[in-house]
Image (cartoon, rainbow over all chains, first blue to last red; front, side, top):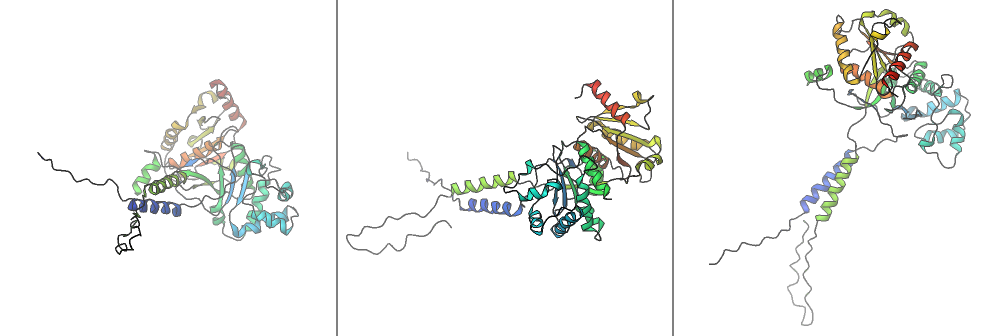
Length: 217
Length: 188
């Protein structure tokens, strides 16, 4: 008996469509993600239930795990004024050339006294070798001077705006006294309101905040 | 799309000695390209962090905290102390040398939420803005930045209105009590 022959079908599939989809998705992901802003050092920020987004152009004080402090002046419009102010008030005696060089640095992580030799260095220092801005002693807390220059530069502007962009980012493992020293420097300059950079976290199930957020939805 | 019609154009004779050119398919195998595409996608998905950093507002009291402290009612005050290794201690009201041993208790981050809530509920109008309720947070010198943020976060989780909690410097007696408790519990 003759069997009906099954027609042989090719197993080759046209991959064109799949290829299109893959590259479409790829281009979407590349375009949708923003490049990470430059970071002085890697810091593991704590989590909080806050839903407010952190300002992008900000004055960011970073506290690392080993207690070093870095300052990032992210607001380009005022950066120059801040640097000029600290140069004048602290008598650093930096030339216009050196100021320009300082302006180009993404963050500051050296004591005021060594800024000049730091700028003169042939090979730039890597962030992890920088000593950080000294804050330990209240008499030598240089962050006070930095914050003073910042408040001077923003004087006349909206206080709310400064509060919005004044960010502190600390490492989980940083010790509390270091953070207290930063707060001390802020308070010295009458900056009582500031923001802590955190990673977002959902409100724990069953908590008051969770219930409130559920009601709103 | 990836194929082209190549069948035409070869129909006329080119003479006896001329060999017919082999008909080659222009079909390209796209499988490796798809592989590469998806590989790159997975790479991008895993390396990018979609979560944006959030900002938590901190309200620092002006330096006249001492006056503020005097204003609050003792019965409505809960003091939370942060020790090392995520240890938490608390007491209600004020601490004196006599009552320290019974008032000073230790807790953990897991339990503190309920304690905060209980305190809020025990104070009249505790959930209102104008109550006497006050949480005082004191961090020991060996506590971590994370703990300080977590406890403030705990306040917002429990919907404690701003102004009803404050971070205050630790006193020597409290620091000593923490140290003693930690030594007794073997926390290094």
